[in-house]
Length: 125
Image: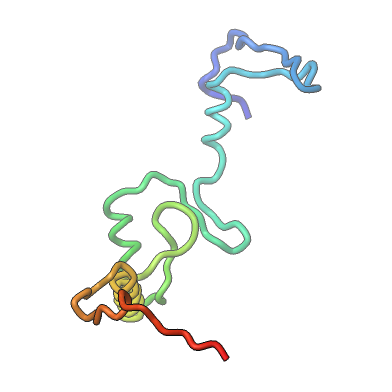
């Protein structure tokens, strides 16, 4: 397939002489970018979905709220899955994760009794 951005005049090229690639022709940066644009922006790899299309607000909102779908839905941008906020199971996961984070960061420190500062007697037989 010919690059439509290329004029009919010859494009400047260079010959690589580095790392055993002697004689390999390098094209301009425009040709490289044109070839990158031809690659698929979304699909699956080993059953895991990916999507690198430019995200829009509508697509972001629609992907996080999908009634009738399962707890996990495809991410609107990136690799993998995300929580479907239309599912009640997702809210339980968020509540449990929030409670664990709250507990880990100290949570309610007034509940502590202060026994940690007193010396402990150890008896060895």
